[in-house]
Length: 205
Image (cartoon, helix red, strand yellow):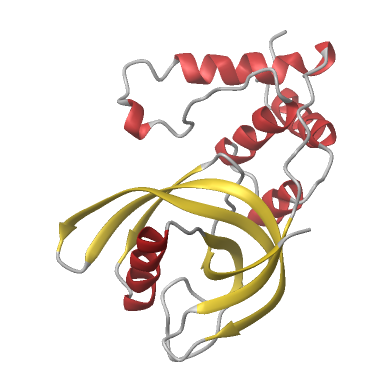
């Protein structure tokens, strides 16, 4: 598997492949990181924060999950001096092999890229999860597309894509989302999400 060197952004959220991640950037370490990523057309890595704060404090050091997702900057808006609005899109998953914090507080990592989910068509017994997601997407027709929590292209016949979108939309604990992210079998991931949706009465077919 390919290895890359990349900056890390520990966050109190889990980014999934093809997911949408809006960020407000104001710390110098991350403003510099975004500038570099834009200039070099390179991604950064989003990892789940397990200890510490997203904003750097003198009290302690961040700890984070050993696996995450690449994030590519899609759009930026500087509406206020020193504050950058950024929209990112999730890419490949990765494992952190080594990490080191620079003097400016930015984490750099050597990471191993993981294979993308195999495209697996949704079987009939799990189609209720795709139908429920389709209803959610249909309800967004009066909302500007830039504010949609799910962005096209929509792949409502693909187990991994539908499962990932439900992982983002459902109020699951972050540790559960992290476990879902690292499941290599997209059909099993969707089966688990289908059960959650069924428990909440969201499966109607």
